Length: 113
Image (cartoon, rainbow, N blue to C red; front, side, top):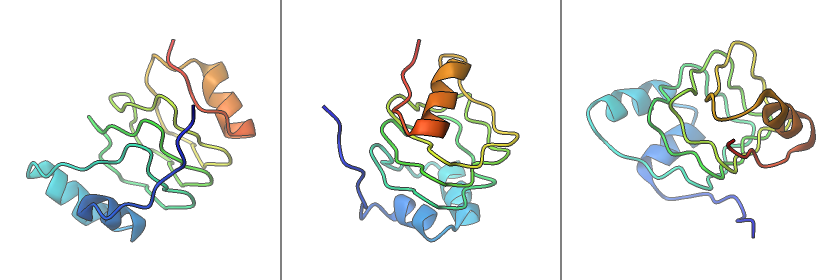
């Protein structure tokens, strides 16, 4: 069963929707939590995001700009990255190159090994 991507009222999520990555990172560093599961982040410029420890399971990241983001410590199970810009991004070792490629090209939801 798949969940539709959500536009949430969570203030931290709204910062990302506004592409205010700097303030998101500052508030995250101060301990503010965010609920990004199943979020709609399509076409967002997320470059510079501190994704360490974020739960982005089920996120819809179609055509998002993820260039250079370290996603190694990010939960991405079920996320979709169709058409995203991923140059220089690092992904969790639990995601195979095949899973990432299938999601990038066809929009499949990524599954951990």
